Image (cartoon, rainbow, N blue to C red; front, side, top):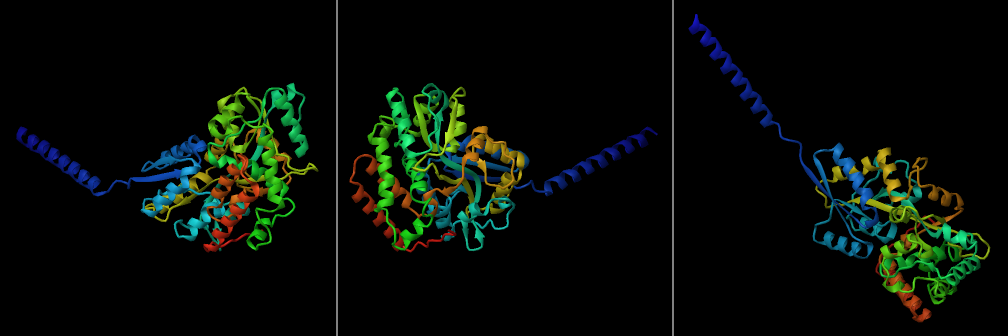
Length: 427
């Protein structure tokens, strides 16, 4: 009996071992889910923390995906991205400036994947989608909407009995009052080159494009020029601000961060900047009380404001994981909680219609004052023109002959046109 019991026990043990070996063999035969590493590359350094939240949320929902991000400021971003594309080392998900500033040239060259019909475009305003559209194909996903506006220190304005100005003359009066009170009227930096375009853009949408939205098209047709009365008048307004001492004394050596810091700390009464800086000012100095108004460039109080996509994402044609990269875009822009948090982190507004973003109240106030807007000028300009424009703004600001500088800008425009770039506009 003992021997029979022993045999039964041994058989059971062997049977259990066999089952274990079979299960182990079965597990080994099923491969683990593919581990994917995506590279994310963007020019919005100021939005790094906001994108980090989005990436974290996506990785949590997709344990097999890791996203490695990298950010460069706009000055070096474009050239770095071009170099990586040239050596077949383009990151999977890339930030692209909308329109001819970057998105359309990259798409025309075959470097971007089509996003046509993807959920990430659902509900996005057609005017924003068009900045990445060639024919019927869309190559970029607009993320958020931003404006170039004027920040002002509420406490300083109250102390001096000032109100947000409505006309150019009123704006100059405010500047002079601040200067007479020992306060820098406008915090400004030229060390980070891209900022040199903000004041000209903010002025020109009223001084030029309000009365003639087709101005750029007419330049392509040879009917208008940079070296003409419209741009000469506009840039003389810029020179007035600089020559009158209304800007940061050492603006040529001041950086973007220093410009924001000076305003946040109350060292300057105003600052012309993108609305994306709202959250940055709050982070730098939570006690700073500030408001926003449209830079007044008119004599009648009717002022337009420059608007643009704050960020746009695209998928590289070189990516090994195109489907996963597209899935990230769809997750980002269709997950309301994730998208809303991103907007709150960046301080920008949604590109989607009928989306409750719970934006900063200061942005809602600005939005209620806007009657008309016009896209950032470089969106409709040929590739490379913004760089030349920025260089010209520094030359004019520092005393170069305006006529000569604008003639050179016209020549650059014609050179770009002759290189075969196609100009398309829905205007």
